[in-house]
Structures are given as C-alpha cells and as structure tokens.
Image (tube, rainbow, N blue to C red):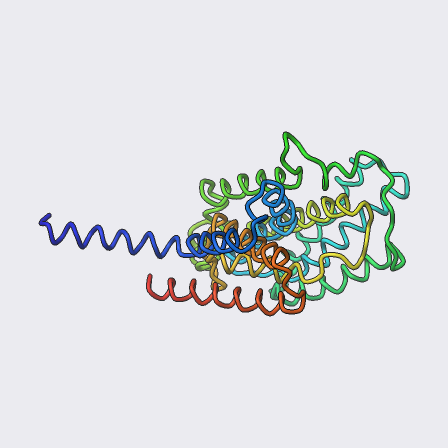
Length: 322
C-alpha cells in the first residue's frame, strides 16, 4: 500500500471512529461545560446521585433496547412501574413476606409481558396497540390496589434496596450495572441476542433460517416486563410506599434514551452500550439543569430540544453510513 493509500485508510478509520463515537463526544463536551458552570457537578456525591437517579429508568431503557431492536414497542412500562410499585407494597401490607412479594411482582409483570407477546404472535395485534391498552390497565390496577392513596411500607430493611449503599456505591446503581452487563452479554454474545437482531432486520428471513420467531417475541416482552417490575420494586423502596402516580412518562424517557443511543426504530440496529450513553446523557442534562437552577418548565423544553438534536445527529450518521 502506497503512502496515499495509507493516508486514505487512516482518515477513513478516523471518520468511522468519529461517527460511532459522536454521542460519546457530545456527552463529554456537555460534562465539561457543566463542570465549568456548576462547580458541584463533578463531586463524588453528585456523580453518585446521577447514577442513582438513572438506575430505575435505565432498567427500562435496557429492556426497551431489546424490544425496539426486535422492531416492536412497549408503551406500558411507565404505568407498569407504578403498578409494580403499588403491587409489592400492597402484598407486604397484607402480610406477604417481602422476598415473596418481590418475586410475585416480577412473575406477574413477566406474565404481562408474555401476554403482549401472545397478542402479537397469535392475533397479529401490533405491540403499539396492546401496550397502549396495557398502559391504561396498569394505571387502573395501581389505583385499585391503593384506593388512590399511597400504601406505606413498614419493613425496616426494605429501604436499603432503593436508598442504601454497598461499598460506597448506591445499591440501585449496582443493580443497574449488573443489568447492563447481563443484557450487553446477551445481545452481543448469545444466539438469543443474534435472533433478536435477525427478527428486527427481517422476521420472515429469520423464520426461514430456523429461528423460533414466536418464542423470541415472547421472551423479549417477558424480559421487558420483568425489568419493569424490578424498576417498580426499587422505586417503592426509594419512597417506602406504593404510590399510583409515580413514573409518569417514563416510557417516553426510556424510548428517548434508546433512540439517543443510536437504536433504529426500523429494527435490527442498535446496541445496549449506546443506550447506556443515552440514559447517562438524559441523567446528566437533568442534573446539570437542576444545579444551574433552570426552571422546571424550561427544563422540559431544553430536554425536548436536546433529544431531538441527538436523534438528528444519529440519523445523519446512519445516512452517511448507508
């Protein structure tokens, strides 16, 4: 290879690296700007606070990554978190041991996820429709379980799950990190993860290649339901009650984190690592605006604009790659 060819090869490699790392660079620049404008931003306490604050939403975002890569959607997760929060609190209030209450909550939400898969596989009902109906159903169930008022949790050690520390690290952040590691491994190194990508790219071709498409769809929605339950349990521990009005619009924030991370709504494209960057992006923006005393109403406008800008950057990268 001559000198000119080597230079072209190097420059092409640099362009590919910049394209794949664009959101990482944007996030780094935002962090540097906040470090200059808000002196408390880079303190250990604040960084741990960001980790804790994104943990429960991050669990939803990781599950949503699998769902969207499979070319599906789940709009029920926000109200599903509220339902799980109220369900585990009501079970404990009725005298069910905490560990059994948590296990039952995960199993019930996992079953609800399987129901979404059943409607999709057996009746070809778009997941958009089923999860929209479930979104409303979860709200009604949460209100029915609590009568519209918070149900207090009186188990003394339970707060540790949402508010405790292990080796100086918030427990929710540890659970968040473990969930990331497990789902990253599944999506990158297992045949199940490869099947999800294949279904999202072309489900008929996946079926002809021997992939059990119905089973994969069942499991993707089941895992999403289980992660929703874990998020609701952590939230109930954080506030030590079951409250039916929590987690409003979390489904939109989870989807935003996935899209910011580069996952395509067309299916078959995306990474859990990208979603991790997306959820940190949202957490940093919210925390930074709070430190800068930005008004809550204006925060929504800024978040919307930044999310749209991030999606446009990812779209431009995708078009250039094509």
